[in-house]
Amino acid sequence: MERTLTPINHPLTGTLEVPGDKSISHRAVILGSLSRGTTVVENFLDGEDCLSTVNAFKCMGVNIRREGTTLSIEGRGLDGLKEPPAPLNLGNSGTTSRLLLGVLAGQPFHACLTGDESLSRRPMDRVADPLREMGAAIDGREKGKYFPISIRGTNLNPITYTLPVHSAQVKSAILLAGLFAEGRTTVIEPVPTRDHTERILPAFGGEIKRNGQYISIEGGQELKGTRFTVPGDLSSAAFFITASALVQGSDLTIKHVGLNPTRTGIIDLLKQMGAPVETKVTEKIGEEPVGDIRIQGSPLKGMKIEGEVIPRVIDEIPLIALAATQANGVTEIRDAKELRYKETDRIQAVVDVLTKIGADIQELKDGMVINGPVTLKGGTVSSYHDHRIGMMAAIASFISEGPVTIEHPSCINISYPQFFHHLNQLKQE
Ligand code: S3P
Image (cartoon, rainbow, N blue to C red; front, side):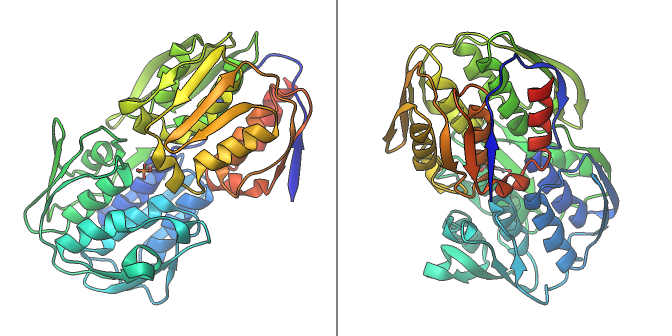
């Protein structure tokens, strides 16, 4: 299957609401399942990744009903999960895999995890190592580095663990395992990563302590069901934020979107590149700030991007690279080697896709260098079966001279099933 997108000949205007946040949707299902009583999640992201999390907990005996984007979860408490009778197929979802391993480490049973080809190439030793230190027995391909993985949980020992990779998934896996350990588990995070686990836990009556780089959780806390509305996903909004920044004369507002500062790197960078972006926090959902983003089209300038901002923009770097093709001067992205371990090697994929449609871009070991501005001609590119690469290529069609054809576009359903609908809406307005 492929999809051909024609260029746009007018600015983007109006307002848009994007679907619920992927990271928060996963965490709401996990904590709802581990709580006592009912949890109702509104604006749940009905993308394939989050449905993998729902399915995994259903297979462990949790009663979860979904009507559209509303979930109702009958939580079973910390000790209520059941041994899954068959391997859990987690599809394409790295977040489900890492966070679930944290939960399974503390269960008195065995589970086997499988996934698609992409997930089977992604490193799991980053969570298997600390979880083994806590006492879990984990095995799999290459000694448990890759799926399929089997895990036998146990009574866990608490640990103090310094994150060797800047990964919210690893941090969250250890904190979730910490719920099942006897005593205090501490994660030391040298560079801040997204902190949704820390922010959502209090909504379920849980306690977590943050002190600079130290994040601590006590084991054995009783969690209580709650009602929670998931904010719009800034990573999904980022596609149309970038489109609006790139099409001169645009003036687009995205409403009810999560503005958690550990996620707003894309806004900071586009501003530094010269785009007028305004954000306004209008409410707080639990501890998550939520609000509106207004973005106008503007000439951009290239810049060097490295260091602490990288984890705050990790999923949006493909879009920054696209924006850089239109920016005046050189944009150099460094310290982003983690991109090589995403759904596909996103450094290689971004360089390949943007080169094919006419960009001047070179691959670096830990990033890329882009020279701009250039006219993107358009052409045929692969999504690499990676939702964010497919959507980045689709956004390129807003500024390309000729059409952009995307091969294997269905992967976009992983995180943004309404993407093409929203794209067509904005192109037609
Ligand atoms: C996520 C964390 C990030 C991000 C992923 C979702 C999360 O991964 O890329 O899309 O929900 O914790 P890492 O923590 O591995 O960088």
